[in-house]
Image 1 (cartoon, helix red, strand yellow):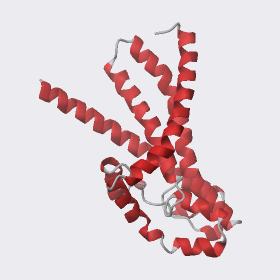
Image 2: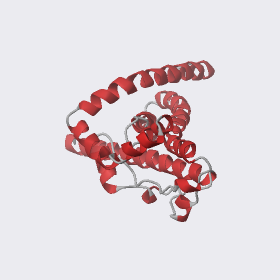
Image 3: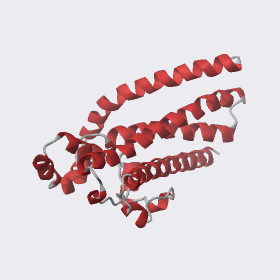
Length: 228
């Protein structure tokens, strides 16, 4: 019975992890393509990437790294900056769209999560409701982490492209020459624990702010429902 329980619990954990991972990546990449399209670049749409189908955005190696190492990547949405009216500005807006979409998803997930968590406790820990609440909680956590990670000003992350707005054009072009080394460097930093320590310093204050928001929302829900 203990082994069976462990197996079911592990299966549920992995199912939640894949649901959350696929959702975060899909929303992130779709936002890149959508904003690029709105700014005049049809490349993503022509390539079939302007879709919420997670399989269109999934990079197998990047997904495995995200699950096992703690960070990963999707297939980059193809962007052609020559379509943009203001190439530098619009490239930064497209890059910002992905992390911004993750933050919005985390916000919406929190709004749904808090009242469902109250309902979960009131229901006597209903199993199906518990799965939904756990998935939403993971969705909030991963999307915040995913957004913050991608905003690090280091090519080829989104933050590296946003950094290009602040740098002189010639400096930014030189920086892009080393973009192909970005992910190997990030993997090495992750395996050595350096990346985790850096992210912890950055993400912890963000999580604290988010907890304040969630607790304020919880107070409102409890007042409306008469407590747990």
